[in-house]
Structure formats: structure tokens, C-alpha cells
Image (cartoon, rainbow, N blue to C red; front, side, top):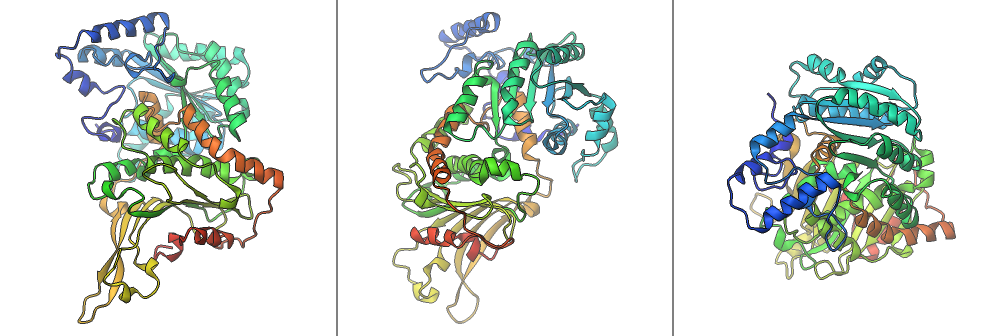
Amino acid sequence: MAVCFRCHRFGASAPSSVDHHRTLARKNKVWPASVPSLLAGHEAIRKWGFQMKSFNGYPLNVVSSQKEEPYADHSKAKEEQIDSTVSITVVGASGDLAKKKIFPALFALFYEDCLPKHFTVFGYARTQLTDEELRNMIGKTLTCRIDKRENCGDKMEQFLERCFYHSGQYGSEENFLELDRKLKDKEVGKSANRLFYLSIPPNIFVDVVRCASRTASSPTGWTRVIVEKPFGRDSQSSGELTRSLKQHLTEDQIFRIDHYLGKELVENLSVLRFSNLVFEPLWSRKFIRNVQLIFSEDFGTEGRGGYFDSYGIIRDIMQNHLLQILALFAMETPVSLDAEDIRNEKVKVLRSMRTLQLDDVVVGQYKGHTRAALFIDNARWDGVPFLMKAGKALHTRRAEIRVQFRHVPGNLYKRNFGTDLDKATNELVIRVQPDEAIYLKINNKIPGLGMRLDSSNLNLLYASRYPREIPDAYERLLLDAIEGERRLFIRSDELDAAWALFTPVLKELDDKRIAPELYPYGSRGPVGAHYLAAKYKVRWGDLISQYS
């Protein structure tokens, strides 16, 4: 049997809502007197639906009605797992995202034996399809791991046999009630858990959630909903969406997905920082001169022009992907790896940031290119510019974090570098995609009798070090949602803080009708971006690197 990559992700001490190894270790432990009362509260919640909340309004993990009881007997937990089933409904099943990402990710999890023993996948959309037509459609997109192709055809057949389809309108409670009947037919005799993935435009999120919550929620287990971005287009619309969703769901049931948080190098960011003594002492304004978060694509807005007309790359990339990565990069050490502890620290970073000003923004040709300078006004990062660059139709495709360290004070070898000390700057680069890598730029002597210096890279290329294929981000996030792990999903107060940073400048751009700076397709972007960097005495690292 294959070993699920998720099983060893954190190590023995990591928290998980279905971590039976920890349950077994606690089996015979004598607990304080307060614990039985908590467990009693847990039972009351399951029976009556009450929900205890902490002072900040978020449910306490220890009494969450959607998590397995943490102190239960291991054999009982195993028995409950065997007698339960998970029904996964992909709403918008005929769309590109579902066909290209969601169904392939579910199959990959099945192939790696990461899905529960009993599971069913339903597609739901307005398109009229039979079960067999759905299977033929998604079967064309399924692939097996490059390094594990044995029984690939058999595994595909087994997966597709568990895939079904129901056609219906997104705002019809009657159609969702019909879906509920089909789900119950597959769940008969088992405790039912249900996951809905909303792969649909945001203007119909609320209709689907209303119908699903009223007529297709699980009667015996948990019900969770994965919501795809965009989460609104500014603070007001985002707040309205959150309030509307919470009329039908609790915060614990809402999983706001940003697939960049599921990428391997982004998840490795906290490991790199918090488990390596060499980095943590350097992670502050004292040693770091600037941080650059770079996203570029070598194609334009083909096929997504309407989306970018409405949202632009600021909303699509900066306010979502790059800002989330920034928060993970800059946060203080969390109390634990628990989801709420990590998300609390991210919120603190976002609330410490200055509101983005128009003078610190350069807009390029397509609404598909923007560069911005942001600042975190706290003791660790005061004065350090965080530069974001996101663009389409550029000369290369890449997503990376570049950390430029300060110049060496009184450098004995500065004469060997000439007047351009930036060439001698130590730089840590975390390349998220493509060709995942972590490398550190250092200065060293070129072998020979003279004293000639060179910049070289200490390089960890993932393809060389870890030849196994890296799981897709959607695989990790879908598995987390099934397990109830919220660490890589966005909480509502995170979303509020993120929009508060960008909404004023977005409004100013619209009100003043700022004309974007033109740049040629396939170039390095608008010239104004260099002036923005120079304003803070920074040079874009990807333009001077040998990896450009």
C-alpha cells in the first residue's frame, strides 16, 4: 500500500484533527479534572448544536463540533472512521478549474491512498450530463505519478466508478434536495460527512450555499464548503459576501482557498525559518535590507480578459497570493503549529501594515502588471520595504521570494567589488515555481594566485534532491479540508485586514482613472517599476540574477 505524503508532513508533534497516533498516546493518560467537563461540553455540542467561542469570537478547537474528540479511545476512533463516509460535491463540475485541477487532485489523493476508505464524488452543474459522460470528461484529465505508474489504469477505473453527476440550477433548493437523496443513497448505513467545492463565479456563491445548507447538509456528520477566490473586489463587497455566507454557515465550515498557500515551497517557508538556527536570528530589519515577492507570467490575459477587467492583477495576485506569502514570511513565531495560532500571527502582521499609497504603486499596460511597495510598522520590520511585482505578458514565468540582506559593515573586500556593492549583497531566494529551489547567494574567492572574488549560489534544487514528483497544491488543500485542518485557509478577519490595505488605492486608481504605463509584450515590464525600486534604494533581484 502506498504511503500518503500527508501522513508524515509535520512529524509526531504536529496537531491534526484526525491524528490517531496522538490519540493512542493519550489513551491511558490521567487528565486534569477540567478535561471531563470539556468533553461533556463536547457531547452537548454534538447533541444540541451549542457552540462555545473564545473572546475573539472564534470557536475553541477543543470543543469544535466538527473535529474528532481528541481524547477518545483509539480503537473506537478507528471504528468510527470505518463506519463513516465522505461525499465530495464539486459544484461547477463542467468548468475548467474542476476538470483541470479538482478532479485530478482528488484522483491523485485516491491513488496515494489518502482518501477515506468510503468516499463518493459528485459533480453538480447546469450542464446536462450522465454519470458516464462525466466520467469520460474527467477521465481525459487524470494522470498517475511519474514515479508510480503501476496499476494506473485499474486505479483510474476504481476512482471513476465512485464519480457521479447531478444536473441542477445553482439557486434551486429542489435540485439540491434531489442531490441530497442521491448522496444518501451512497451514504446508507454510514455516518455521512460532506464537502462542497464551489468552483463557480462568486456572484452565485451565496445561492449555492443557501440551497446546500438548507437541503443538502449532512444530517449526521460535518458539512464543509470550500470557496474559491475572488472573495469580493474591495472591503465592502468582501464584507457583504462574508456576512451572507455566515447566514448559512459557521466560520469553521468555510474554507477560503488560496492555492498558492498549498504550494510546496510556500509551506516550506516556516520550516526553513523556524527549524534552522542560521536563519531565524537574521529575520529582521537589523540584517534584511528588503524583501521582494515576484510573480510573472509569459502570457497575457488570454481567456480571462473579463475577469481582469473587473479585478485586475492587484486583486487577483497581490491581495491574495503575494500578501498571504508576505504574512507567512513576516509573522512572529506562533505558539504552536495549530491553525488558529498561525492565523493569529498572520493577522497581526496584516494589521501592522501601512495602507498602500498611490505613490508606491506602478500600474502597467494590461491591468495585468502592477508593482507596489508595502511596509510593516512593527519592531521587527520597521523601515524594511516589501516590494511586490506581479505581471503578465513578461519575458519569463516565475514566482519567488527574494530576501536581500544588508551590506557587510566595513567590508574588507569592498575594493574587489568596485563601487557597486549590490553585486556583493547576500541574497536568499525561494523559488516557488517553476523548477522549485532554495538558494543562497554568497561571495567567495575564485581559485588562483590572485584575489578575485565571485558571487556563487548554495543551491537546493528540488528536482535533484527530491526526484519524486511534487504534489499539486490542490491535493494538499483538498486533503486538509477533508481532515478539518484550517492552517492553509484564510480566516474572515485575515480577509478583512488584507482588503483594508488595498481598497483605498484601488478606489483612487478608479476615481482618478490612472493610465497604465505601456510596455512591449514579452519585455521586463514598465520602466516606472525601476524608479519605484530606486526610491527605496533597491534593485530588483530577478533582473541582476544569473537566473533571470
